[in-house]
Image (cartoon, rainbow, N blue to C red; front, side, top):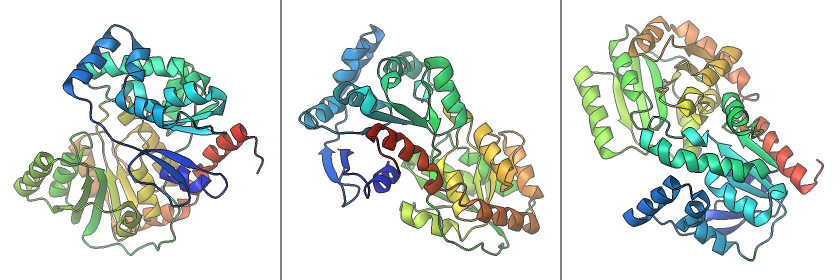
Length: 361
């Protein structure tokens, strides 16, 4: 969303509506107060969805009501609905012809591994896609396979704008000894971090692994640290970095690693921002065989895709790494920085917004 705000602020009079302070001094901001629904509210929500009263369940939500009230007297030429939760309000209030929906992930299976969630939220999100998103002027998501799923299941034509990182002017660093491995991102059991630690502990290659974790609970961090200690792994948990400092820090490493568990459709078809962060940092990549990530790695020759999602296959990939290979992959990342940059990808949003506004560039 910040990339959209910054990308359009010079050419349009931008107003943002959401939680927290203004994201950019050039825009007008309508700040909403975050509210966690209580147990009674959640119980009512589940009951309404179970009865099939999707419209009431959506419009009775406290955040939707707050945003609707804040935007009552406002009029806009173009509205970008960020994530599916905002699409209903955007289309109903401003008309689908004025709305671009940026859906990011595949919402009906956001937590597809959770049967209770699927029985509840998935039905609501599928209804929202049919009722509101189909009426939008344009829709984007983060990967080709997710776009195909929106079209196949819901009849929603969706274009792709990847979660790319802004282009950086950074050097290709010399390969270190031991090889410096790095992971940056969410810290939870879905990300395969335990496999990263175990593979680093057991590989025959001399490596050191640093983990920059966000959104991690103290319980999870303690458990991961215990695994590091038990395995005598050459690894450490680092303090998370603000995003503007992350890519320059990653540039001091050799290999970006990521092997998420394919527990749901979004994980299986993931093409996350960390892949693009690694490329802008001029790193070699070692990733799991998620279809979209693997396609990028193979197309640009920027690293290694493990045979499967096991710790064993990850260790074998580490075992096979040589300094010469890592240098070659880092050079390939350097060559791919423009093609895989946010500046190239954001043209997809620009075309969508300009088309709604009737603007020719």
